[in-house]
Image (cartoon, rainbow, N blue to C red; front, side):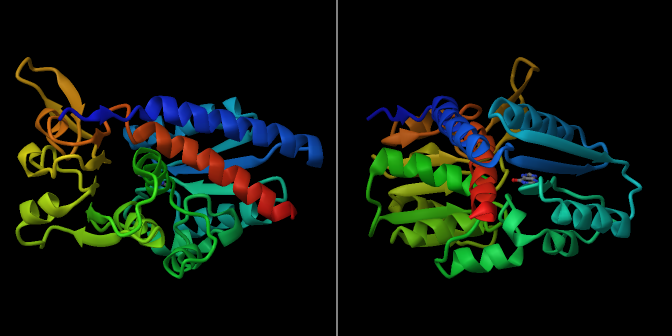
Length: 288
Ligand code: GUN
């Protein structure tokens, strides 16, 4: 079997087009476009690229984007004051604080300071709790995008064996909650898991989100499985050139899987599309 390669770029673009239509409708009805404020503290180059990409995509969808780029020395009270101002601003529907934050800032305190109704990352404890309880919530963008890809490939996943590798708050845990909400049988593997190969071999759905290049061997994959690779690891190839690879050995996994996401061009484009969808969702909820 050779897997169908899931085109996250095309799927992400389709979602962005749908969101843009919703944005135009919102603007016509309410006399303003939804607004997203992104906050970046410091100069982390990868974060700066993400923030720029988010700003471009937000504007392309017809929304208002504000990027707040603060120096690395920004104090926690200064950051909390900005968040309070964004919470109080009626033209701001979504607030995203780019992670990681500098070490002198308490990330949990900052995330908990964002108005849950504007928490387009879905990281506020209230939204985490709602997702866990199966209630309507703003859901983290990356796992939400992964779920869309999985449902498009497989349709109903009720009762299917799903394995999430990684237990981060950004991807692993919310991914498991989303799969559970769709009635999959969910296992979460992590760095202490014994015999990862045996878990992978049982899984009809594999989502890998650990950030270890090639951790999941292609030969472990259950034939016909839907394989979603969230990893983006920079490695140097035999030719000395840097390239991005996932957590899953792509070619051997592709030879066994039913569906597989490439890296890059799989999950990545779904994350930004999911952010735009969340911003529109937050804007609509705030005016209703
Ligand atoms: N850093 C890496 N991924 C993310 C994400 O999804 N949201 C935010 N805010 N920061 C990140």
